[in-house]
Image (cartoon, rainbow, N blue to C red):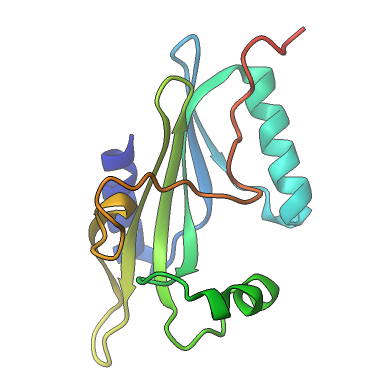
Length: 161
């Protein structure tokens, strides 16, 4: 799913110059669902709606794609509070990416990105797929976990009525 999403993003970005946030999900019955992210609801309500939708459809695996800001280095302790308060959109070292983030009921999280390259001349394009765990500033053997409203979208087994 990750490779498929990466290929899709490369083609779509080449055509449109942007990636609309969307979900590619698989249900326990093997059904594929492609769903745009409901940005019109606001961040918290959209995440709650997707969580409820995934629970109703018994989603066991998904990939989310969307544009984001990131840092390609560790966050310094003295930066943490300001980044938490302001976000990365104004940080001088920010990097624009298409983030590809997935979860699987059996295997957990996977996080990758493709840098958005905007040359002074020519069309913007995406860089190669980079697995977050493979970035040079991540210590070898470290487990990278993402946090936030768009993580933990899968229904918890045994809680459905």
